[in-house]
Image (cartoon, rainbow, N blue to C red):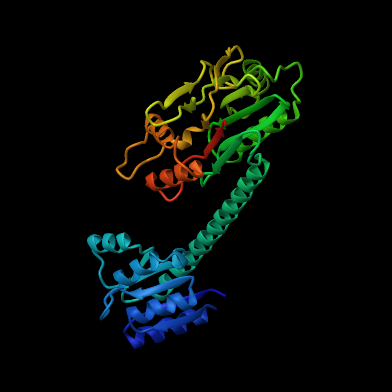
Length: 378
């Protein structure tokens, strides 16, 4: 049974509306002023409110605004009861959040029809809200599933830590690292274009294929060959028009050498040096189109030596494409400066980086997935 709240300082109007609506099968609660009406609304959460515009104390516009800004009452259908019928008055009412108007003197059939229409819209709003909550729950579960697939931190023979903060919509970030043999470690991070499950599923597919080495005739020690194999397997025409960027590297711990290749991905950042004075920053990136865009795309390898006490950062663009409070977009260069400045600090550096990014972000949640890998070499 739908519950309706009537707010009016005129007792005769209260009695008239209560009797009329109860005959239609509705449960009716009444209030004699705006303050009492808001209290009743919070207590009963009615499906529909009929409120007089002109009342002592809080008027109908103020009550309407208070109701519509309450998250628990946002789907309540609000009808203003008024003798004012100018266009300007109607605009003021709509701006305050009113959903409909009934003009005095009240015509019973019109009132019944507007109430029925209002309750239909209220039910539709409730259904949409429930579907939204269900979708958000499912996306949160999907994000937890992706998180469960990601590798655990590594402490020997060097340290690998990570941060993964899925966006509100869930995106396509994914990463992994594992030993190809006792001397060679493979590490990669990829970012599928777009948001939602359509972006997440290709990322999970790549992770499973690489982790199981299911792609045949592939040299997993040669990054460019891995990207070539992925590009042949994940063409947009066959993957819901989804492409992804990826950075893939193989580290030889005996030679302290890193071989890498990238496909449209932000550069990995290698920070080295024994003090602030001799800190060096290398951007590790090779030319190559994102995987899936073009069948004929070519990928090349590059290599570098890794000095002791260096840190390698691999990340998605969500780590620096952040809207600041002044409305401007943060930059990759600024993000790299933060990485370099933390090279010789003590403690868990990824926590410091994440706290800085959260403080920098002007919104409640990040617009895109944020993923960062840190490899600290002794």
